[in-house]
Length: 120
Image 1 (cartoon, rainbow, N blue to C red):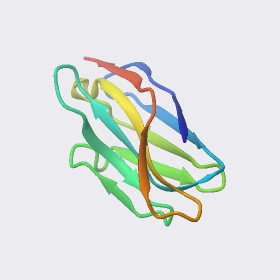
Image 2: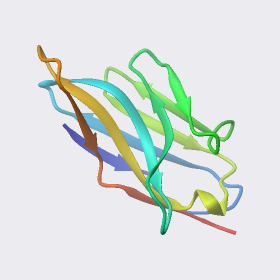
Image 3: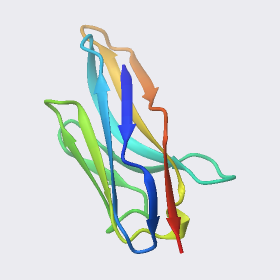
């Protein structure tokens, strides 16, 4: 599976950004997709995930400000980020779990990361 992320950039505090990620891999069944982030000098952390059935999970820091959307037909997810804060500055990574069609083993894939910088 290949993950192609886009949409990062520089924004002022209080602004909004939308990240997009597309998963490709016809021989795979795409499972949970999500976004993680790695702030400078810190470990990678969960931002939000969404299942194929639309069940979402958000980090506490993202609740009420970030919203994750999914298009199952296109295997894409978007992360709408509102009311951005300087502490949201991080490299954001797209993630997916996938299984080969007809198999049960679950693989985990990561995108290349996209930088989000929020200035104060």
